[in-house]
Image (cartoon, rainbow over all chains, first blue to last red; front, side, top):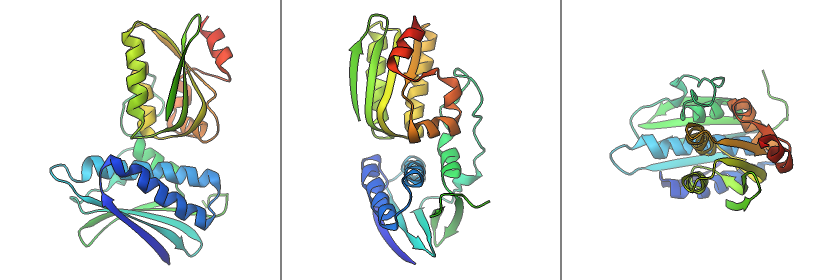
Length: 141
Length: 111
């Protein structure tokens, strides 16, 4: 495993830096463009969630690690906020019409849909969301 | 993200280019809200140059579309392509917005 890590304050001003960091790693990995764009959206959703919810009463850091793990492109986003598994949130209703559509809930839907595998773990006081994309165009079952 | 505004005979066209993400989406919302406040009620949003949209971008689109609906306004999207189209499809937004293949088709649809 060869992972690079970026640690920064969990604020929206750092979103571009986070996206560029992951994009450079994805390019080095030679992830297909379509998969890369999907991963970047998932990374934005995960990072923005940390910015908005991980540290309600204080400032804190987010740590983004990514790289090649046995031929898969892996991104992990960690925060040291209270234990919270974003994957425990229910799927949004994607069928309701314009006025009934809720404004929130889509972020985790994108994280699930645009990655090949996603998992949450609590480790040494950190929430860690791991997202994996396989190099091949076709998604394993 | 850049936003270019053009007044056509029957609608205001907003041409969006670049990235519509958690940082830039508020700019879109502000631009459209200003047009609505100025009395405009028919819009075409041209996504030809849009490279990327996240849920924050969709949230801004939805918020302005809801506001417009309460004022009996109308909105059409044009040139929803590539990854942006895929995001619309997996979010179900492809079926809650009226999408046309071109700005001219969207303007014609508004009548």
